[in-house]
Amino acid sequence: MTAPVIVRAEAIPVSLPLARPQLMGGSQRFTHSESLVVRLETDSGLVGWGEASAAPTMTGETLPGMKLVADRVLLPVLERAPLIERATIERRLDRAIPGNSAAKCALNVALYDLLGRHYKVPVHALLGGLARTCVPVMHLLANATIDEDLDEAVRKQAEGIRLFKVKAGVKPVVDEIAMLAELRARLGPAAMLCADANTGMGLQDACDYACAAASAGLLFFEQPLPDHDLEGMIKVAQAGSTPTCADESAHDIDHIIAWQRAGAISGVNLKTIKLGGIAGLMRAAIVSGQLGLKINLACKAGESSIGTAALVHLGYTVPNLDWGITPSSQYLAKDIVRAPLRPVDGSIPVPMGDGLGVDVDETAVEHFRIAV
Image 1: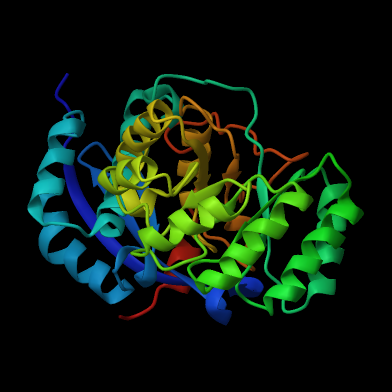
Image 2: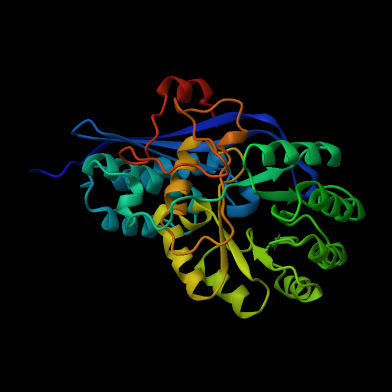
């Protein structure tokens, strides 16, 4: 049987509304999430979908830049490419242009979705099969006020969520430290807590927070300082007993190795947009595990269920998943799949359909398409 080839490829910029504004470190406020959605089609009529959110402070890519690189450099690589030669296609995409990990991610996810649909298996089967029966879902607390965060945490715990991430570097550090104690008191000892400052803290505040976080029993303290500040992160790691986690500074495997060897981190947040997609994240997870690092898998806030599906398949297959997964499609007011992925009793069930296992609503994609 002749192997299918890719005959149509399109990169579609979309802007998806969040159910409520999200606050990030440095007091950044977001009401929409911008992503590049990729649609691939073979000569046999199969269609695969991929997604990558624009995160300029993390990957250096804006949505217009991602669209331009995809159209002019990456999508032409796929023209008449035999679908089953995935590894060859990935190498060609990687060599087509340096960097641009998020733009490459959108294509890589679409390739996996398309390949799974061709072989009629879920993506997790392409990755070696299930390594666990559930994936603990981390819920983000990023409201305007501490009281809102506390109330939301109690509601989500009642729904089965056991793992919570507090956004730090947004409010005065003394208030954020007090909030940790209150959150622990309200949720009890069984809840798992962590904090993420998204590079939004200064060194002294970060050290103070790391020291105080120990009494709240935080799993980890993520990226309080700018992504280049290795020396500062070493000081934060030494300031208290709370494990430190790299996110914005974990640009690639080389950076992960360097920060681990320097003693700056105990764990790492892995995102498909930083590592070029599903294949790159799996490689980074294997290396991180060999280094003894704890692992959290995460979407950027507001990715659709396309990006969430890719993360969930990886969550069920990476060798170790010490700190759970952080999907983000549940924070959207509107999704672009017909049956959005949602946590159930603290986990997201593994999608069992072909490919990513989500049914993309092309009408919704067109509705949220934007010009860039």
